[in-house]
Image (tube, rainbow, N blue to C red; front, side):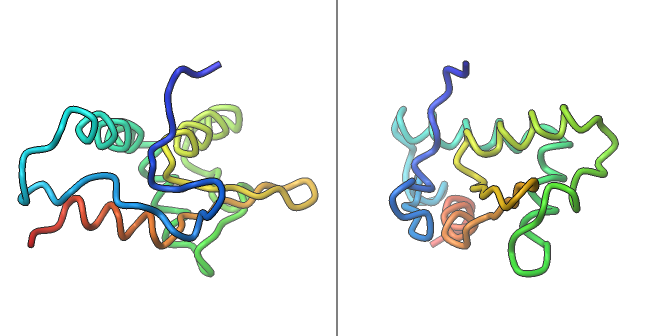
Length: 121
């Protein structure tokens, strides 16, 4: 059981509308809560395998990818599943089971929220 909280980027009720987690880094100093939220996102993306999986999903045709299409990242299938789970827990991916396969998606609003955090005004 994980003790991490999901980022408030994706809300289960409306995954297509993600709230920005934090203000742009150049706007003002972050509050402790905003820093915790952003740190969870960066921590999830701080692993090279997770970053490759996130990139594979984000760049896949149609904006979603079957796990069968993205699992060739140099680690075993259980390890791929572990990393995908961590990305989901961080609020960076959503998933949907279709038959025996799971499809992952990076919601456009998540990318927009990440871009806002790293952007400048």
